[in-house]
Image (cartoon, rainbow over all chains, first blue to last red; front, side, top):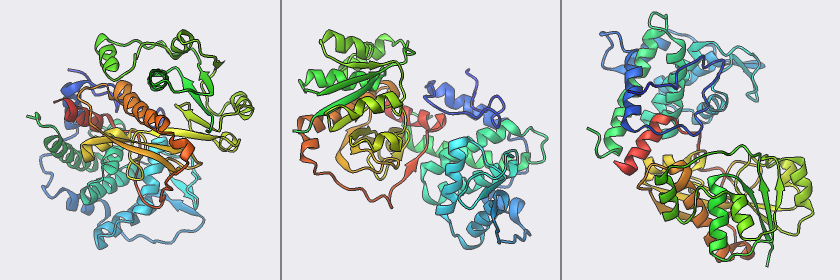
Length: 196
Length: 229
């Protein structure tokens, strides 16, 4: 079996470009699933994946939603997530800015100015990648727009590259992977006639 | 009639464009070849056969096609579309329109020289703007499309010359063969029907639509398996 290679190397230092990726038939999809399954280690993950991940990430969190000269990415993404959770409001204009920022550089920086130019060289805060992956998966659930599943897959490549099994964030990653795999399995079932 | 030129690269897309232009006896005013001599790609027999079925020889270089057909062409030893030498050269040519076949995103320096650039984008805009749209279109609509448009300073927002929808491919060589095939078929329709002369272009509403980013290999595999399984 071939090895899933898109989460190999240090992706925050040498981002994956995904240009002209090669086709390897079902072997590739099987290697992808095998690679992702390595991160599903807990038996106590609840079936209500979205609600539980909300609970883990933003419950009892009070966020001051004022911004001055700079946009703090973690705070901003948490606000976007809370708007979805509390009001079912998807602020696609703002979500799409972060999707584009990540897609173009495969990085999320700590701070941006009001024109979304990076104001920090620090791109190593994994919470930002977890938050945006969760938001993208929620957007895909809501709109079935493949753009968001596409970005979530890339974010999860970065996260599986950066988070080891004993990492403090591994439980978040486990939820994200479980949701992602559910969507991928469903898409395979819908789109490929000979999927068994 | 407006004079038309073409800017070619040594890639599959350019090969399909120039070979089908020759096959359809379409006359171009200016032919430019950008080549950095890096293309040493080889193709399997299956790829060669499928490309022939799609109306072009994938393994015949653009330079060979031009030379064999005794065309005069200007060759540059670089592949960047925004190169100052190319901009200077284009300014002095008579052609009003140039067919674009890659080489980067056009910057204002080249967009503002008084020439218009025709792009064959593999997606029906405004619904499919951005990168690798044919894969998203297969997954969403079970078909593919091409939009011929005049390039402007934004991404895939230019005035539309022609849009065509195609059945999804029945083989796996979408990047190498199918992409080149559907773009070149649309180009030939534009040129044979003199659509650039008519200048009856349709303005896009850039406030609607979707812009996609380069497809993740998992989604790409699902799209290809959707075509061949």
